[in-house]
Image (tube, rainbow, N blue to C red; front, side, top):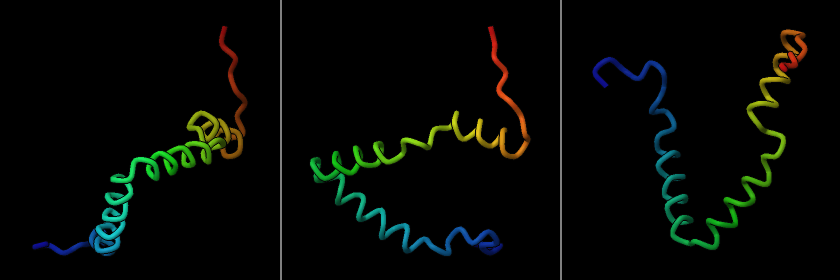
Amino acid sequence: MNWGDHYLLLADYASYVAKQAEVDALYRDPDAWMRMAILNVAGMGAFSSDRTIAQYAHEIWNTKPVVLG
């Protein structure tokens, strides 16, 4: 901290530590952890890196996919 926190990395550190304590407690409950993990995976269906990159290329660069083979 000799030169300050120019990028404000510590601005939300207290909330990060508090949330990590919640995660730690949840991890100690295997059933709750498994339920949340499954719901997390199930909820991210539309969020794949391939789809995101293809959508970005189409919408921003107006490109079309190249078919190989």
